[in-house]
Amino acid sequence: MKFNTKTIHAGVFPDPTTGAIMTPIYQTSTYAQSSPGEHKGFEYSRTHNPTRSQLQDNLAALENAKHGLCFASGMAAIDAVVKLLSPGDEVISTNDLYGGSYRIFTQIFASYGIKFHFVDMGDLDAISALVNDNTKLFWVETPTNPLLKIIDIKAVSIIAKQANALLCVDNTFASPYLQTPMDLGADIVMHSVTKFINGHSDVVMGALVCNSDDLLDRLSFIQNSCGGTPGPQDSFLVLRGIKTLHLRMQRHCDNGREVAQFLADHPKVSKVYWPGFTSHPNHDVAKAQMNDFGGMMSFTLSGDSIEEAQAVISKTKLFTLAESLGGVESLCGHPASMTHASIPKEEREKAGLKDSLIRLSVGIEDIEDLIEDLRQAIG
Ligand SMILES: *Cc1c(COP(=O)(O)O)cnc(C)c1O
Image 1: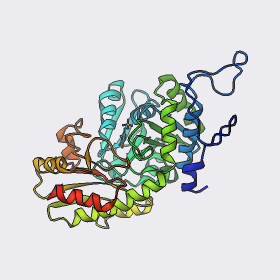
Image 2: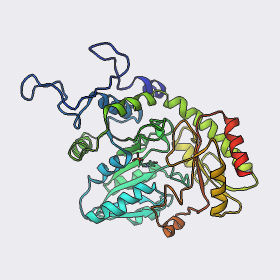
Image 3: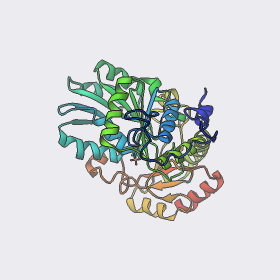
Image 4: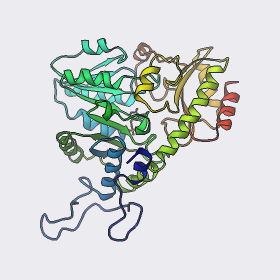
């Protein structure tokens, strides 16, 4: 089955009792047993729920993986991956990282004896230099947030395999429409389903996919033991959102291309971070591992002051100032004071994140309206 067909058909099937085409919302915590231990595969909804099962199978198919697991948020999914590790283990992670990932690594798991290294993963030698016998996990996020750097997933997967460590890729920014890291050597793909996959800014959810049966067993055990699972209503909403993932992503990419070009041509804009430009330092890697370049981008203004950036984002009308990304509506944000506020200023600057940087999640509205909105806001 090809991608566009999978969004609609993979993992889902008409309800066997009524023929209902859409996956029912099995709003139940428990299931009747005919005698002790005799049941239809469902015992308790923290462990399994039929609505969630169909979503998990659909997500696995979209990512070209065997298994899928859903969590109550992207952070709960990340939490489950790190819980595969033990005290003394080390993680090598990209330094241009989602703020919440940096926070859970450094402020939760570091105190459980897990050591995290943050490195510019564009530099493969710098990654290799951090590998030692304790290295158990590589954490890649690409495109990165908010600088839209592209990390070569296949190249990192080779280093991870040599180190006998797992590679987990946070695929939130790309979505499986743009890239499927399992095909490039990832062991686990993680999603904040909240973003492009659900796409309607009305659900918070996370997911993991993997191929290994052993990893599935370990991650399911963590999922069930720690309990960060989503409910059936949210699972239904995400299944519905996914049915238009390919259409939405196509439009995000088309609109993204035009907005990026508009910004690049604007005299008050000093720099645009978008991997579709041939001048982007990782454009060749992006072209090789992604199907298109998406609607996420960042830019700085020529004055380069925090005040100038804040003036622009408070003037936009269609680009709503808000956290999050990947919904049908366009959003803008100021990473230094919003998503990345939990990363200390010195760390932000080391990673090249300017205080004047504005991030856009370009939605699927009419492009003329989006450009007009940015024109009047930038002035
Ligand atoms: C939002 C986000 C997360 C966290 O997901 P939640 O669903 O908000 O818990 C992780 N990684 C990236 C790249 C994100 O954008």
